[in-house]
Amino acid sequence: MQTLALYNLKGGVGKTAAAVNLAYLAAASGFSTLLWDLDAQGAASWYYDAKSEDGRTKKVLEGSTPIGRLVKPTRYDNLAVIPADFSYRYLDIMLKKVEPPRQALKRLLKPFGEQYSLIVLDCAPSLSHLADNVFAAADLVLVPVVPTFLSLRAFEQVQDYFKQEGFDATRLRPFYSMADRRRSLHRELLEHPPKAMARALRAVVPYASMVERMGEHRAPLAAYAPSDDPALLAYAELWLEAQKLLKL
Ligand SMILES: Nc1ncnc2c1ncn2[C@@H]1O[C@H](COP(=O)(O)OP(=O)(O)OP(=O)(O)O)[C@@H](O)[C@H]1O
Ligand SMILES: [Mg+2]
Image (cartoon, rainbow, N blue to C red; front, top):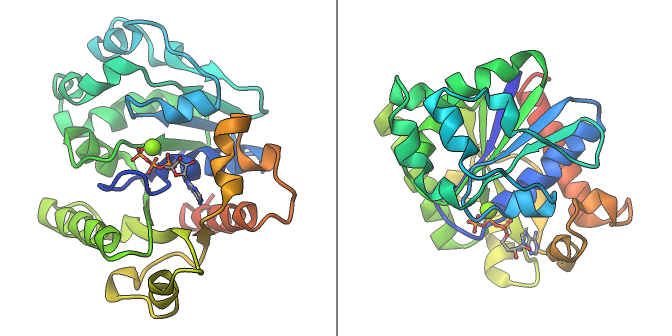
């Protein structure tokens, strides 16, 4: 079992869009996949129409309910979801009660090892105790970076944090997201990537209304976009790169 996290300190950069599409593509290529929505906004859960049961997460963290009871099927083969709910705004505090605190998420995921080949974590935009748990649990942390200076700065902050806290920085890899070649700054940063993007994946997710329409279809791109859609092709390339890095 490998764990892939979509993370950025910055909000609205395409973490959830990538998590939802990569989880789908992994499942469609035959890997038994579990997408865990760790964000109280519950966007990934909403795309997959998965709802959680009141208070159940708390019971799992307290050890009175097995974690498997959080899993919901989706309408897609090989793909299941653990939905978030509003109680996830306290997930940070809840995880602190599990020992050892930074390893709590990794320990919680362990029982899934037999059933799933891939766990995809959709993260909230914050550098919190939950993020520490994600960094400790993930084999690969993919960071969507919009080609703008503030977005690059946020990635550098995450990189610095990894080093400072002793997390394995080789597991942290950025990729360009929501790239709009009509904008001169985006074009410049894509053509002359700054140092921070030296280890970026090759896939570039374009800014595309087809991605925004995931909200209309409440489905991953592959369910409604033509097979040659540029954004779908970008996610497919991203998945192939992630698969390679995860040695799946
Ligand atoms: N490649 C894209 N092209 C155009 N719009 C996009 C693209 N990716 C995401 N969006 C849109 O941008 C918004 C934010 O995307 P998304 O929810 O994936 O970001 P996020 O990083 O998960 O945000 P948050 O930090 O709030 O969790 C959404 O409305 C989504 O539809
Ligand atoms: Mg999100």
